[in-house]
Length: 254
Ligand code: PGA
Image 1 (spheres, rainbow, N blue to C red):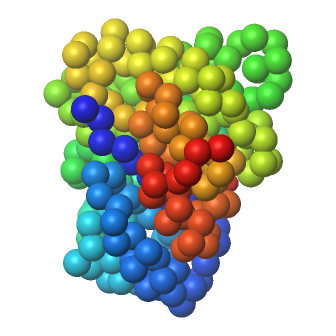
Image 2: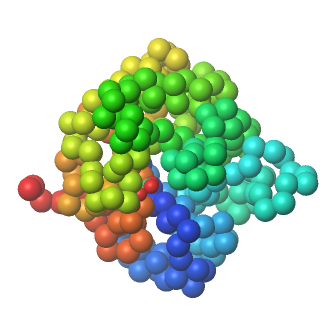
């Protein structure tokens, strides 16, 4: 059984006070949420404050990026050990904004995932196709090579620790969600590839969907066989909205 995992990706938003206020408002809203993993990825600057506010809860802290090096002369970068120091249990790697705006490659993402695993931090590895790639029917080819190359350094016996996030680029921040069926089609393809790569253990890897997930659509997405969670940007910025997403199984029907 794959345990659902709902993650908030705040991107470059919220100063420390705002981040802490979110947590203070969010925790009481979760009362009955159980059986799911909840993750919050604030900007680096708010990690410590959010980590402190989350203490005693079961919510995990995540970074939005990491450098694969152990440390040294890399101005402006953050090493995996620094994330361990702040109590991060997860880190997002290869988000499409990092790939498209900052030139991250599959090879770079693979190195980051390996560095995180070496520090016992679970990588959330993002993949996704552009609108142009989808329209030219290259979705499967693009996702398949992203998976192959980005997970190339994950050893078979550590595969259960990774999370894959499928985020079609055309659905991120646009209000345009993939239909549950469209998302499931890609998730099933990813699942098959994970099984081929990691054997039985590939069936246990959680695959999140991301791209305009909100309280109104999360339940239908989560009902799909191979959708095990959500990576949420815009709708994770307000405590009420993210709490509804985390408690997706309590939402009424359409
Ligand atoms: P969105 O972002 O929910 O605002 O579309 C998702 C993401 O980029 O992880």
